Amino acid sequence: MGVDFHCGDIWFSRSYHGWNEIRLRIIKLTFDYIQDRFQREEELYKNITDEGDEHFIGKGSTYYLCKSEIMEIIKEINLRGAALSINTFINLCSSLSYVDSLIYFDISGIYALCNKNDCEGFYSVGNSFDICQLFGLIETFIEKVDSDLYSAIYIQKEDSNLFGNRLYDLFKESATRNKIITIS
Image 1 (cartoon, rainbow, N blue to C red):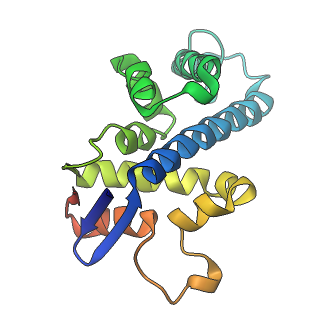
Image 2: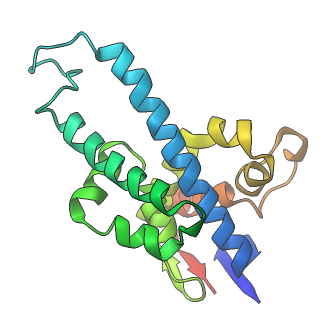
């Protein structure tokens, strides 16, 4: 028994446990990515004090507010550690302001990826676009630390003649062909 995803001729399949592990690892690496981004942007824009400057990230900016909300999610995730579950993550992000913060930093694909049933349902074309955007942002983080996860998401150079059975292929197919993904 497991979870199967289909979009046209592209498919992805894993055991329920395997799918759960993939999503939990993507959650962790997404928040590793965003913390690294915060650090780089803090260094880059720390001397900007003009609130009218598009790169102002200090108190009172949308950036600051959204970053604070993301840091709250990270704090809660870290408190749960190994006890983190997909349902707990979805509950943490259920506040609309938290979802908006994920959107602000282009990582809302993590919420779209996790906020689905494991047995029946669909990913919309919009979900797929958001998930592809997320995969593009976190690819180097995954490649550096988790080769098994990397090979589940992306086609590796040695696999370049293969098509399918990779998450990125599945979601890209949906986003580019304007077709939903069926979960069964």
